Amino acid sequence: MPLLEIDNLSVTFQTAGGLFTAVDRISLHIEPSEIVSIVGESGSGKSVAVLALMGLLPWTATVTADVLRFDGQDLTTITKPELRKIIGCQMAMIFQEPMTSLNPCFTVGFQLTETLKIHLGMNRAEQKRRAIELLELVGIPEPEKRLSAFPHQLSGGMNQRVMIAIAISCNPRLLIADEPTTALDVTIQAQILDLLLKLQKEKGMSLVLITHDMGVVAETAERVFVQYAGQQVEQQPVKGLFARPHHPYTQALLNSLPERSNSRILPSIAGIVPGQFDKPQGCLFSPRCHYATDLCREKPPTAGPVEFGNALCHYPLADGVPTNYPQEVRA
Image 1 (cartoon, helix red, strand yellow):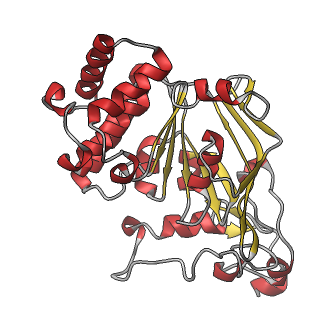
Image 2 (cartoon, one colour; image 1 turned 45 degrees about the vertical axis):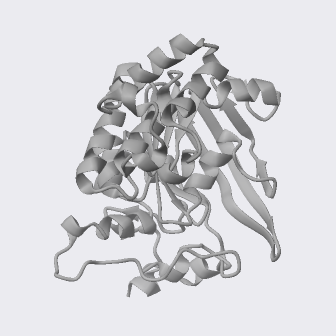
Protein backbone atom coordinates (compact mmCIF):
# COMPACT_ATOMS: atom_id res chain seq x y z
CA MET A 1 0.00 0.00 0.00
CA PRO A 2 1.38 3.47 -0.90
CA LEU A 3 2.43 5.62 2.04
CA LEU A 4 0.94 8.71 0.38
CA GLU A 5 -1.95 8.72 -2.09
CA ILE A 6 -3.10 11.88 -3.85
CA ASP A 7 -5.64 11.74 -6.68
CA ASN A 8 -6.91 14.80 -8.56
CA LEU A 9 -5.71 17.41 -6.08
CA SER A 10 -6.77 20.95 -7.01
CA VAL A 11 -6.08 24.25 -5.25
CA THR A 12 -7.87 27.49 -6.09
CA PHE A 13 -7.42 30.95 -4.57
CA GLN A 14 -10.07 33.65 -4.30
CA THR A 15 -8.52 36.86 -5.63
CA ALA A 16 -9.79 40.32 -6.52
CA GLY A 17 -9.77 39.22 -10.15
CA GLY A 18 -11.70 36.01 -9.52
CA LEU A 19 -10.70 32.41 -8.91
CA PHE A 20 -7.13 31.42 -9.70
CA THR A 21 -6.30 27.71 -10.11
CA ALA A 22 -2.77 27.18 -8.80
CA VAL A 23 -2.90 23.38 -8.84
CA ASP A 24 -5.06 21.55 -11.36
CA ARG A 25 -5.92 17.87 -10.71
CA ILE A 26 -2.51 16.41 -9.94
CA SER A 27 -1.98 12.86 -8.68
CA LEU A 28 0.90 11.49 -6.65
CA HIS A 29 1.47 8.05 -5.14
CA ILE A 30 4.57 7.49 -3.02
CA GLU A 31 5.73 4.12 -1.72
CA PRO A 32 7.48 3.60 1.65
CA SER A 33 11.23 4.47 1.51
CA GLU A 34 10.88 5.87 -2.03
CA ILE A 35 12.59 9.03 -3.31
CA VAL A 36 10.55 11.07 -5.78
CA SER A 37 11.07 14.51 -7.26
CA ILE A 38 8.61 17.17 -8.38
CA VAL A 39 10.14 19.48 -10.99
CA GLY A 40 9.09 22.55 -12.93
CA GLU A 41 9.70 26.28 -13.26
CA SER A 42 8.66 28.80 -10.65
CA GLY A 43 4.90 29.20 -10.88
CA SER A 44 4.27 25.53 -11.66
CA GLY A 45 2.42 24.91 -8.40
CA LYS A 46 5.00 22.59 -6.85
CA SER A 47 5.13 24.23 -3.43
CA VAL A 48 1.40 25.00 -3.33
CA ALA A 49 0.58 21.32 -3.87
CA VAL A 50 2.61 20.13 -0.87
CA LEU A 51 1.52 23.04 1.31
CA ALA A 52 -2.06 21.96 0.59
CA LEU A 53 -1.14 18.44 1.72
CA MET A 54 0.38 19.83 4.92
CA GLY A 55 -2.63 22.08 5.60
CA LEU A 56 -0.49 25.22 5.53
CA LEU A 57 -2.33 27.33 2.95
CA PRO A 58 -4.19 30.55 3.91
CA TRP A 59 -7.95 30.80 4.25
CA THR A 60 -8.26 32.14 0.70
CA ALA A 61 -7.29 28.69 -0.65
CA THR A 62 -9.84 26.00 -1.48
CA VAL A 63 -8.41 22.47 -1.59
CA THR A 64 -10.26 19.57 -3.21
CA ALA A 65 -9.14 16.00 -3.97
CA ASP A 66 -10.71 12.68 -4.87
CA VAL A 67 -8.18 10.95 -2.59
CA LEU A 68 -5.85 12.51 -0.01
CA ARG A 69 -4.58 9.67 2.14
CA PHE A 70 -1.49 9.14 4.32
CA ASP A 71 -0.70 5.66 5.61
CA GLY A 72 -4.31 4.64 5.04
CA GLN A 73 -5.77 7.67 6.87
CA ASP A 74 -8.06 9.99 4.93
CA LEU A 75 -6.69 13.49 5.51
CA THR A 76 -9.91 15.11 4.26
CA THR A 77 -12.12 13.57 6.97
CA ILE A 78 -9.96 13.30 10.10
CA THR A 79 -10.29 15.93 12.82
CA LYS A 80 -7.84 18.82 13.22
CA PRO A 81 -6.31 17.37 16.43
CA GLU A 82 -5.72 14.08 14.60
CA LEU A 83 -4.19 15.92 11.65
CA ARG A 84 -1.84 17.84 13.95
CA LYS A 85 -0.53 14.51 15.29
CA ILE A 86 0.52 13.60 11.73
CA ILE A 87 1.81 16.93 10.43
CA GLY A 88 5.26 17.70 11.82
CA CYS A 89 5.61 14.21 13.26
CA GLN A 90 4.92 11.42 10.75
CA MET A 91 4.94 13.83 7.81
CA ALA A 92 7.42 16.73 7.94
CA MET A 93 8.64 19.46 5.62
CA ILE A 94 11.85 21.41 5.06
CA PHE A 95 10.84 24.84 3.84
CA GLN A 96 12.44 26.74 0.99
CA GLU A 97 13.89 29.70 2.90
CA PRO A 98 15.39 28.84 6.31
CA MET A 99 15.93 32.49 7.25
CA THR A 100 12.21 33.21 6.89
CA SER A 101 11.02 29.83 8.19
CA LEU A 102 12.90 29.99 11.47
CA ASN A 103 11.57 32.48 13.99
CA PRO A 104 14.23 35.19 14.55
CA CYS A 105 12.89 35.89 18.06
CA PHE A 106 13.64 32.42 19.45
CA THR A 107 16.83 30.42 19.82
CA VAL A 108 17.62 27.34 17.77
CA GLY A 109 17.25 25.23 20.90
CA PHE A 110 13.76 26.55 21.67
CA GLN A 111 12.55 25.87 18.13
CA LEU A 112 14.00 22.35 18.17
CA THR A 113 12.66 21.37 21.57
CA GLU A 114 9.20 22.80 20.89
CA THR A 115 8.58 20.03 18.36
CA LEU A 116 9.88 17.37 20.73
CA LYS A 117 7.65 18.62 23.55
CA ILE A 118 4.46 18.84 21.48
CA HIS A 119 4.74 15.58 19.52
CA LEU A 120 6.80 13.30 21.78
CA GLY A 121 6.00 14.70 25.23
CA MET A 122 9.64 14.73 26.35
CA ASN A 123 10.73 16.44 29.56
CA ARG A 124 13.36 19.20 29.51
CA ALA A 125 16.36 16.93 30.01
CA GLU A 126 15.19 14.58 27.25
CA GLN A 127 14.47 17.52 24.95
CA LYS A 128 17.97 18.97 25.37
CA ARG A 129 19.64 15.60 24.92
CA ARG A 130 17.65 14.87 21.75
CA ALA A 131 18.26 18.40 20.38
CA ILE A 132 22.03 18.02 20.77
CA GLU A 133 21.84 14.60 19.14
CA LEU A 134 19.91 16.05 16.18
CA LEU A 135 22.35 18.91 15.63
CA GLU A 136 25.22 16.41 15.68
CA LEU A 137 23.34 14.25 13.20
CA VAL A 138 23.02 17.09 10.67
CA GLY A 139 26.69 18.03 11.01
CA ILE A 140 26.56 21.20 13.13
CA PRO A 141 29.76 21.66 15.20
CA GLU A 142 29.55 22.46 18.91
CA PRO A 143 25.85 21.52 19.04
CA GLU A 144 25.33 22.30 22.72
CA LYS A 145 26.63 25.84 22.16
CA ARG A 146 24.42 26.30 19.07
CA LEU A 147 21.26 25.64 21.09
CA SER A 148 21.49 29.15 22.52
CA ALA A 149 22.17 30.81 19.15
CA PHE A 150 19.57 32.80 17.21
CA PRO A 151 19.03 32.15 13.46
CA HIS A 152 20.74 35.41 12.44
CA GLN A 153 23.90 34.26 14.20
CA LEU A 154 24.20 31.24 11.89
CA SER A 155 25.06 30.98 8.19
CA GLY A 156 22.51 30.03 5.54
CA GLY A 157 23.88 26.49 5.38
CA MET A 158 23.73 26.16 9.18
CA ASN A 159 20.13 27.37 9.25
CA GLN A 160 19.21 24.88 6.55
CA ARG A 161 20.72 22.12 8.70
CA VAL A 162 18.69 23.36 11.67
CA MET A 163 15.56 23.16 9.51
CA ILE A 164 16.46 19.58 8.61
CA ALA A 165 17.04 18.75 12.28
CA ILE A 166 13.59 20.10 13.21
CA ALA A 167 11.98 18.18 10.33
CA ILE A 168 13.54 14.81 11.26
CA SER A 169 13.25 15.28 15.03
CA CYS A 170 10.27 12.91 15.34
CA ASN A 171 11.58 10.38 12.79
CA PRO A 172 8.95 11.11 10.12
CA ARG A 173 7.89 8.48 7.63
CA LEU A 174 7.62 11.11 4.89
CA LEU A 175 9.96 14.08 4.49
CA ILE A 176 9.20 16.84 1.97
CA ALA A 177 12.15 19.05 0.99
CA ASP A 178 11.05 22.20 -0.85
CA GLU A 179 14.05 23.58 -2.77
CA PRO A 180 16.39 22.57 0.07
CA THR A 181 19.48 24.02 -1.66
CA THR A 182 18.08 27.41 -2.72
CA ALA A 183 20.44 30.38 -2.11
CA LEU A 184 23.26 28.10 -0.96
CA ASP A 185 26.66 27.94 -2.65
CA VAL A 186 27.55 24.85 -4.68
CA THR A 187 29.68 23.20 -1.98
CA ILE A 188 26.97 23.57 0.68
CA GLN A 189 24.32 22.39 -1.80
CA ALA A 190 26.18 19.12 -2.27
CA GLN A 191 26.57 18.69 1.50
CA ILE A 192 22.85 19.26 2.13
CA LEU A 193 21.83 16.78 -0.58
CA ASP A 194 24.27 14.17 0.71
CA LEU A 195 22.89 14.70 4.22
CA LEU A 196 19.28 14.25 3.08
CA LEU A 197 20.10 11.05 1.18
CA LYS A 198 22.10 9.71 4.13
CA LEU A 199 19.20 10.38 6.52
CA GLN A 200 16.69 8.87 4.09
CA LYS A 201 18.72 5.69 3.83
CA GLU A 202 19.42 5.38 7.56
CA LYS A 203 15.83 6.03 8.66
CA GLY A 204 14.05 4.37 5.73
CA MET A 205 11.75 7.34 5.20
CA SER A 206 10.13 8.42 1.96
CA LEU A 207 11.60 11.61 0.50
CA VAL A 208 9.96 14.16 -1.80
CA LEU A 209 12.37 16.64 -3.40
CA ILE A 210 10.82 19.75 -4.94
CA THR A 211 13.23 21.45 -7.30
CA HIS A 212 13.84 23.04 -10.67
CA ASP A 213 17.41 21.72 -10.76
CA MET A 214 17.47 18.72 -13.10
CA GLY A 215 20.98 17.87 -11.93
CA VAL A 216 19.63 17.29 -8.42
CA VAL A 217 16.88 15.12 -9.88
CA ALA A 218 19.34 12.95 -11.81
CA GLU A 219 21.48 12.35 -8.71
CA THR A 220 18.75 11.61 -6.18
CA ALA A 221 15.29 10.62 -7.43
CA GLU A 222 13.81 7.28 -8.40
CA ARG A 223 10.67 8.73 -10.02
CA VAL A 224 9.97 12.21 -11.36
CA PHE A 225 6.74 14.20 -11.64
CA VAL A 226 6.89 17.18 -14.01
CA GLN A 227 4.55 20.13 -13.40
CA TYR A 228 3.73 23.09 -15.60
CA ALA A 229 1.32 25.93 -14.78
CA GLY A 230 -0.32 23.86 -12.03
CA GLN A 231 -0.77 20.74 -14.17
CA GLN A 232 1.09 17.45 -13.98
CA VAL A 233 2.38 17.01 -17.52
CA GLU A 234 4.49 13.85 -17.16
CA GLN A 235 5.63 11.19 -14.71
CA GLN A 236 8.41 8.67 -15.28
CA PRO A 237 11.23 6.74 -13.61
CA VAL A 238 14.25 9.04 -13.56
CA LYS A 239 16.30 7.03 -16.08
CA GLY A 240 13.44 6.92 -18.56
CA LEU A 241 12.75 10.62 -18.16
CA PHE A 242 16.31 11.65 -18.98
CA ALA A 243 16.68 9.14 -21.82
CA ARG A 244 13.22 9.47 -23.42
CA PRO A 245 11.14 12.47 -22.28
CA HIS A 246 7.58 12.29 -23.62
CA HIS A 247 6.27 15.81 -23.04
CA PRO A 248 7.73 18.74 -25.03
CA TYR A 249 8.09 20.71 -21.78
CA THR A 250 10.21 17.96 -20.21
CA GLN A 251 12.30 17.80 -23.36
CA ALA A 252 12.78 21.58 -23.25
CA LEU A 253 13.85 21.45 -19.57
CA LEU A 254 16.45 18.81 -20.34
CA ASN A 255 17.69 20.66 -23.42
CA SER A 256 18.29 23.71 -21.19
CA LEU A 257 20.95 21.86 -19.20
CA PRO A 258 24.38 23.41 -19.86
CA GLU A 259 26.00 20.00 -20.37
CA ARG A 260 23.60 19.30 -23.25
CA SER A 261 24.43 22.49 -25.11
CA ASN A 262 26.25 22.15 -28.43
CA SER A 263 26.96 25.87 -28.81
CA ARG A 264 28.30 28.79 -26.83
CA ILE A 265 24.76 30.09 -26.34
CA LEU A 266 22.81 28.20 -23.69
CA PRO A 267 19.37 27.06 -24.90
CA SER A 268 16.31 28.33 -23.03
CA ILE A 269 12.53 28.05 -23.12
CA ALA A 270 11.06 31.18 -24.64
CA GLY A 271 8.25 32.94 -22.77
CA ILE A 272 7.02 32.49 -19.21
CA VAL A 273 4.62 30.29 -17.26
CA PRO A 274 1.08 31.69 -17.81
CA GLY A 275 -0.59 33.48 -14.92
CA GLN A 276 -4.18 34.02 -13.89
CA PHE A 277 -5.12 36.32 -16.77
CA ASP A 278 -3.08 34.97 -19.68
CA LYS A 279 -3.80 31.24 -19.72
CA PRO A 280 -4.33 29.99 -23.30
CA GLN A 281 -7.51 28.25 -24.33
CA GLY A 282 -5.94 24.90 -25.25
CA CYS A 283 -2.72 23.33 -24.01
CA LEU A 284 -1.11 25.62 -21.43
CA PHE A 285 2.33 25.00 -22.92
CA SER A 286 1.26 25.68 -26.52
CA PRO A 287 2.55 29.32 -26.71
CA ARG A 288 6.07 28.08 -25.88
CA CYS A 289 6.00 24.71 -27.69
CA HIS A 290 7.83 24.05 -30.97
CA TYR A 291 5.33 21.35 -31.92
CA ALA A 292 2.09 23.26 -31.22
CA THR A 293 -0.68 22.98 -33.87
CA ASP A 294 -4.13 24.53 -34.11
CA LEU A 295 -5.47 21.56 -32.12
CA CYS A 296 -3.03 22.37 -29.29
CA ARG A 297 -4.08 26.01 -29.27
CA GLU A 298 -7.81 25.22 -29.27
CA LYS A 299 -8.33 22.07 -27.17
CA PRO A 300 -6.81 21.08 -23.79
CA PRO A 301 -5.05 17.70 -23.98
CA THR A 302 -5.82 14.66 -21.85
CA ALA A 303 -3.23 12.44 -20.19
CA GLY A 304 -1.76 9.88 -22.56
CA PRO A 305 -1.08 6.18 -21.95
CA VAL A 306 1.28 4.93 -19.25
CA GLU A 307 3.95 3.97 -21.82
CA PHE A 308 4.14 7.66 -22.69
CA GLY A 309 4.57 8.69 -19.05
CA ASN A 310 0.92 9.80 -18.86
CA ALA A 311 2.11 12.85 -20.81
CA LEU A 312 -0.48 15.62 -20.94
CA CYS A 313 0.03 16.22 -24.66
CA HIS A 314 -1.83 15.76 -27.96
CA TYR A 315 1.39 14.51 -29.57
CA PRO A 316 3.56 12.82 -26.90
CA LEU A 317 7.17 12.35 -27.94
CA ALA A 318 8.70 9.00 -28.87
CA ASP A 319 12.49 9.16 -29.18
CA GLY A 320 12.28 12.93 -29.55
CA VAL A 321 9.64 12.86 -32.30
CA PRO A 322 5.94 13.78 -31.75
CA THR A 323 3.56 10.87 -32.35
CA ASN A 324 0.33 11.12 -34.40
CA TYR A 325 1.62 14.42 -35.78
CA PRO A 326 -0.44 15.81 -38.71
CA GLN A 327 1.19 15.01 -42.03
CA GLU A 328 0.65 18.52 -43.36
CA VAL A 329 2.54 19.97 -40.38
CA ARG A 330 5.40 17.50 -40.84
CA ALA A 331 5.73 18.60 -44.45
